[in-house]
Image 1 (cartoon, one colour):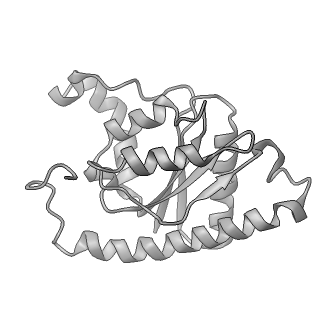
Image 2 (cartoon, one colour):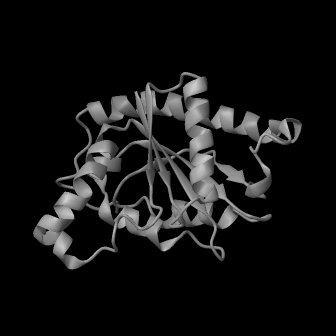
Length: 200
């Protein structure tokens, strides 16, 4: 089974990307997925949506093709979302405009929110509220919030990291279980995105 991690920060050398690497390494250590692909939004590799995407614009098709392929192959996802002024970054919201049911539909996803301070709850709420409707991504009931991100998983305080590591391990194992279950849903023949194109 394959896992894709979406590192949702536009910034180069971001904490989101560092945590994405930590999660990828842990997934492989626990032998939960056969492969892990990190898809980073650093440097804005995906320009903001415009109408030409729906008209089959060749530049858009070329730009999105590798991302679409990797997302289609994924059995599960982790969405790493930094909190910028209490919000999810624009590039991550844009991601959910560019990719839909073909890439994300009925696949489990673990929200991992990142905060430099005591925050981190707002990205969880925002993603659960406004990112899933048409793409049909299935967020796990559990999520991870990494607070004071600059001070965790640095190797300097293994004891201090233990509770968060236990939580991460639990959520990663849960994600694997959901990925197995939702594979049956996708294979069931019940899913009908042609008739029911929108989530409501």
